Amino acid sequence: MASIPTNTRIYTIERFILDRQADFPDATGALTSLLYDMAVAGKLISSHTTRAGLADILGSAGQENVQGEEQQKLDVYAHRTIYQLNDHTGRLAVMGSEEEEDIVPIPEKYSAGKYVLLFDPLDGSSNIEYNVSVGTIFSIFRRKSKSGPGTLDDCLQSGRDLVAAGYIVYGSSTMLVYSTGDGVHGFTLDPSIGEFLLSHPDIKLPDNPKYYSVNQGYHRRWSEGVQRYTSWLQGEDGGEYALSQRYIGSMIADVHRNLLGGGVFYYPADKKSPKGKLRLLYEAIPMSFLIEQAGGYASNGTGSLMDVVPTELHQRTPLYIGNRDLVEKAEEFIAKYDS
Ligand code: AHM
Ligand code: MG
Image (cartoon, rainbow, N blue to C red; front, side, top):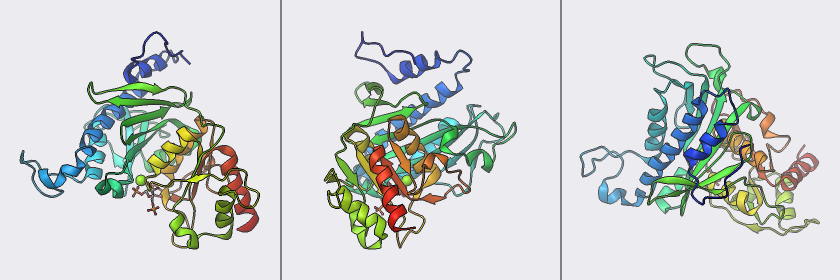
């Protein structure tokens, strides 16, 4: 991995991504450009999310704003922004979005490329009206088909096949965090110059976790194993931590906080959602890749999420993600009490 220069405090994402490309002499630059386009998408979506509270003043979804343009719901805007930045570049064979039922083809008039882009345009979007952090999650795979338009099969790949994944969290500041498999790097958007600057090089989960994050309101819906695991995290049943509970209800923001502070986020299968709520391809797999790159682990409760090969685009999964020992403990409780 190219070393991170120490002679400057200003290290833009563009320079960082380009420096990484230098590690791969055969690289064509397509992945570099694709990552940079995701950073551009992040800036555009960020500028819209920060104006979300002005919707009533500037016109809400379905109405025209003062410029006579129709307002879009933010998640639709985020989807279209990512699509429009990527449909014509010749880098992608196909896309998939949590906002779309089926795969999102590249228009025939443009050439098909070698990569596949899957994204959740705005995770946690039900939080927007409360001014709570939301985020964009993306995954990049190599296509499996040889040529022509990309297929559903090109999208159904496991975390082990990922070329890159990342997220952009729109919080008190906007951060982009990504990995191409050589560690996890975080950039903070400086809105005054419109650039993402390297702020968190080579992120590793802290050894001493602080938080557990789960929707505790659903306690009665959980299995015995999940209930006992939660008590263990609280320091009962021989639990060694007595962690603090924090739950935003935006997976991206919850996992981001735990990545920096240490801890575990989980959304288990429960009586209401027997297969879990979160999406395997759009949410669980990319976050698992990032957490593994940061020294952690992600599981569906019985084994590594990185090994699960999706069979459907919108497949759901239980998710346990964070510090390895905490996630493995969830697997232990589930194996002991739920199987
Ligand atoms: P979304 O993709 O429709 O926004 O749903 C996913 C979100 C996650 O960000 C979050 O962890 C979860 O739903 C919250 O669900 P709940 O309100 O059931 O706790
Ligand atoms: Mg989502």
